[in-house]
Length: 222
Ligand SMILES: [Mg+2]
Image (cartoon, rainbow, N blue to C red; front, side, top):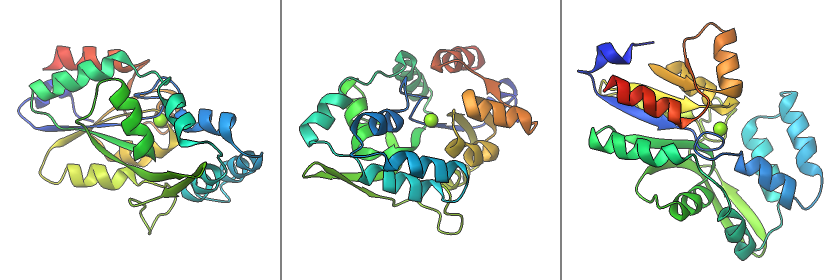
């Protein structure tokens, strides 16, 4: 882990997880609770917890079990709240010419809707894809790492390629799908599962409660 204050001559690239990092809840989990056609999503969740299936297989089965009309999905997405400091962070990073990317196991359609509703449209997103048709959701996974296959979207690959030109990777996240990417990053801001796991494995991270903590850290460091 690098000390940001000592690294100011270096360039940075900042990666944000989406669910429960930018949004105030885990949107997919909430959608499964609300809109699943039956209880099969819970069985898949259990099999994933027991590590019998990877998260792509779990997520694919769960999302395919959702029944919702496009209009109702859009209405629901308009109710999702984001951390108010995300916008401030983007503005700050832009003012310093630091690229910011969202890396998420959620879906582009959902992420874009939520961001647009909150006045954000120009941020790079690496996520899964979704088409909505006849009350069903059809997921696609363009960024799976076929050699690993655990996560639906391999966030680690994105961090590794972001660092190729010598930039330091800053990672902000909370969950299991953030773990590999966080371990490749130079500075990690973590909460919940990610924080607990990194601390257990004695990997350095900056514990956060929300994006305000990241914002304050950046303001002090730059
Ligand atoms: Mg998350």
